[in-house]
Image (cartoon, rainbow, N blue to C red):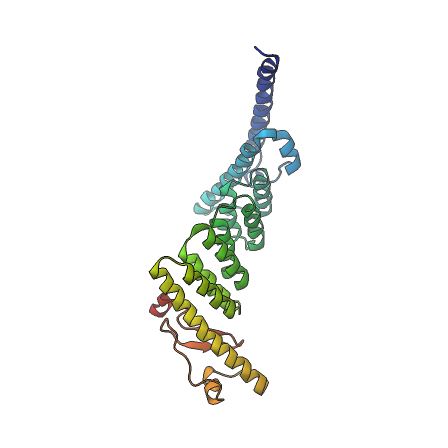
Length: 287
């Protein structure tokens, strides 16, 4: 037997024994602590990286399991109407450490999206985790989809929402994300950009139904863009926003209010933006 192999057989049992000592000591420590403090302390990420060596993925998974078990226990107690304080800062620190040890573990990203955003309002923190994950899971359309949703739904940052929905569309090939990207590009005020984007997508689409859907949305935005130009001309002439779209017709800036291809009615919002009762979708008209 070669000398290096004999050394390996001698070292491996020692490493395994040391690893088991750490794991069992941690498990015993966790059992002995009060329930609500069980996420109170973890070593620094650099310390854990040094201790775990080639087992970073395993340690990262254990940390995430620790968070899931902790939160699951809280949910069970809440179901039994027991009021238990939630240590969200410790949960965030543990998730952060877990994802730094293993940035490919999807459990951390799902948990951040499902709990930190809705339960804690830590949308920016969740986005930080997700955006970091995109550097590693660069094939995963779900991460940009989550960030796009967070920017649109929680932060009302429609320009950033459009950017991430475009990325999700590119990775997944899902036409829903293409439509969402166009919708949020329009809502950010970048209507002309949305028109160009949707036109390019329609030209490159091989599916006729998808092409038609994209062209309908583009037609709606072309009409919005015409309304926006008339609104801007009104402001330039009068020094104030019009009270309604009808004012643009009366001022001779429009021949008439264009029809929304989705069947809704265009509306001038109080901030001067143009929207539609359809929400730029056929489902919006049905509702």
